[in-house]
Length: 227
Length: 227
DNA sequence: AAGCGACATCTAACATGTCAGTTCTATGGA
DNA sequence: TCCATAGAACTGACATGTTAGATGTCGCTT
Image 1 (cartoon, each protein chain N blue to C red):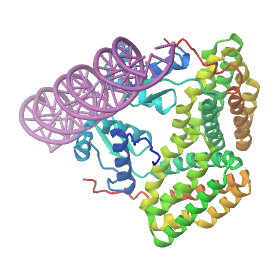
Image 2 (spheres, rainbow over the protein chains, first blue to last red):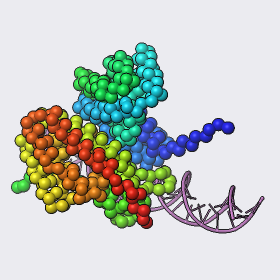
Image 3 (cartoon, rainbow over the protein chains, first blue to last red):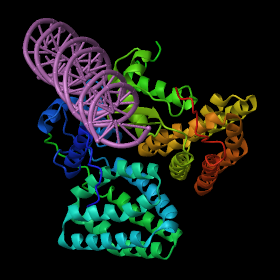
Image 4 (cartoon, rainbow over the protein chains, first blue to last red):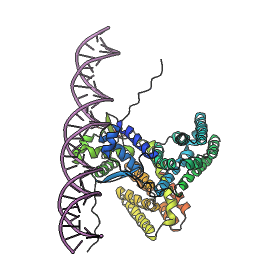
């Protein structure tokens, strides 16, 4: 008899959250666009309650902003906000690397190598989605291994804001950030038990991202035709 | 004619959030107690909607936990969780100190000195509430000055979990953590423009807190009489 | 007596209705 | 033509009703 996993118990609000978040990160709902709970509810085929839950979560992550009683809309890509989020994520990744390295298993290292391989392949193929996903998985190994749920939650909270920028700059972004070489160094440091080194390399990887936010053309008033 | 500030426009969900959070931090609603949205709504004199908003925020901060369709209750004081939160807050405070110091104004420094004075006085008088408040204000100067809203949000998100522990240990906590001397050193470093030093001292202050979480007697099955 | 299953009861998730604050728009006056 | 203003229209905040899932209890079966 096969092993039985508990069935996935999904809440509508979580499903709605993921759907809306991904649409925003991918740019399907452009920066500045106004989002009405009623409209989204109808499009997703559910009621306003779970949609509002999802929107308030997104507001906490900086992907949407709302003024009481008047509007809720997708935030614009303000370089400063992205840089701020990246600084927080970087601090978390540093912390995770430092505290995870001493406890890494062989399986963890293998997972990191595999993810780096996928990252390299995806970058070569120009597959942005796959590249970002592989990158998430690579760093996710350390974040998970450090076992600090507050770190995990904080990383997950602010990563989408950054991914949205990378998604917009795809070509350049996945190339610049994807630098598999740096990730290779990171894995070596982890394998060698060098927590301090791993933390330093992690910082370097994410600092590049903070600079990405300052590149020209990031916020050319965004999409003026917001609809 | 006096300057007119906009009237505070308060949302019920925020009011509810603050009320419930403070009740939990102070221990008025003990760890492990179950909270029913309907009951809270009645006690606060409003409907379930804003209460549920508040509870979902509190769940994100680790002060309550809920299992779908069954219960929502105040989390127990698990040392590990507190330590995890403290590690995150520490990382944020370090980051804030490092990036705020170069931009501190004379007013900022004065505010820090004043807060430290209040902290010293409150600790001497054994006034836990005032001491924790002064401590918040002191560090809050740096957090605000660094201008990174993600940092601010993250600090505010995880501080209550820590405060709850301090509140429980009042005597010892405010004495151990209150150490006005360290805070004095921090202020000196800030005044001298020593960002690295300020960051290091900040780390030291918060590391003491992480250790506080490991002291014996923190989680003696908590309050077994939960009602 | 032990184990199983039907059922009663409870809670939170979701749906829907209402109300008030905000913003847009059209109109009239300077 | 521009601005002020009234009010219409819109939107989100809050209230309340409904439903599905969870848990505990009790009686039946063996």
